[in-house]
Length: 210
Image (cartoon, rainbow, N blue to C red):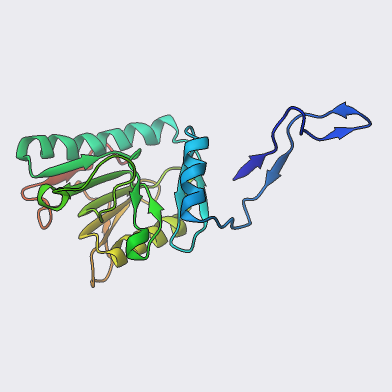
């Protein structure tokens, strides 16, 4: 994760000669911001993928590469088509942000998420959604550290997400997270039965494994 100084009048200079932007490597340092400052950062940096952990640490995620983007699209399409057929809720892609600060959490953006329709009555979908989703998917990309994603999944479980899937193409496995249950690990499954939360929904993983 890196950040840069601005150019222009305030840019650094040497002997009166203006220098270009200076980059500060902060990948090994946790930056803490308030939820309000996080919202402003999102407004000021619309092209960045930002998250805020429940400890107030800012997370800057690298843009997804083509391979991960394609797989994420496949997963979102599977959920979206099922939801269109059943009409049981609302489905969201990775650009959707959730505001969990009212539940002791941060501001996160799952790769795919779904919420039952009854739980969204009277809830505005403008801005970050202040509701804990029923179902989330996190897809590990080549640049994602597994430990960080597992911690994120643990947070989803703590918040009350009924079913969370961590899909790891590199390890060819899926980790299932449910409230008050041990994590279940499936080795390279053809798919995952999500019927416990989304009736008759089978998530096909045939296009995910390398």
